Amino acid sequence: MNLSKLITELEENRNELLAESMSKYMQDKFRFLGVRGATRTEIYKKYFPDARKSKAIDWDFIENCWNKEEREFQYVVVYYLKAMQRFLKREDISRLKYLIVTKSWWDTVDLLAKVVGSLVIRIEGYDQIMLEWSKDSNIWLRRVAILYQLSLKDKVDKQILDKILVNNLDDNEFFINKAIGWALRDYSKFDPEWVREFIKKNKDNMANLSIREASKYI
Image 1 (cartoon, rainbow, N blue to C red):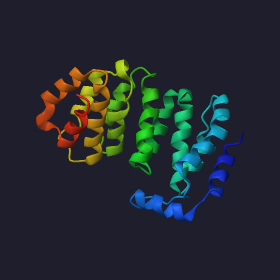
Image 2 (cartoon, rainbow, N blue to C red):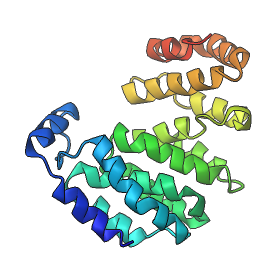
Image 3 (cartoon, rainbow, N blue to C red):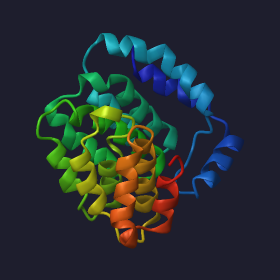
Image 4 (cartoon, one colour):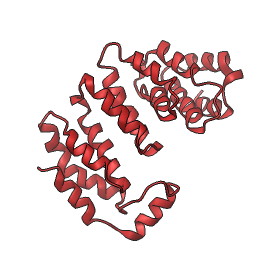
């Protein structure tokens, strides 16, 4: 099935009234077609299973969608990559980085963090790239570094997580402090004692938001 038809189908579902409210919800940072999430999911189901059969990521399709103005097309990219993440290659980390730092907001970045995580845990040494990102001036790269190990449970590298979080303490940025709390809260489901010790050791440098989020389940 031709992925370009997915683009056409999204455009055919345009709804100007919904587009306006969706844009307001996202603080008017992006224009929207006005296609609800449930409708987008139904459209994806028509195309992504066949796309997986190709066992190769169509980066031309990704570029085409990413360059379009309406936000739904960036959603296509991140959900397509999530569906195709097993086919990511070592060199694709630079492409993922570009997607993180352009048209950046939490709605795409947080899913890209999971996509990045799927690649990092497969490629030896790529955790060092996450350490580099955790000190970058771009807050979205730092957020990805903080979040890429979400839901890994016993596969979480605690030493790397500790270093990445410490690199981002004493920060006033909401999206960083929220991410720190989220990462700790998620890991507390598996190892609450480690999270308690991290908070105890670092609480003087942690934002209240991070501590509150991290302590939710402990």
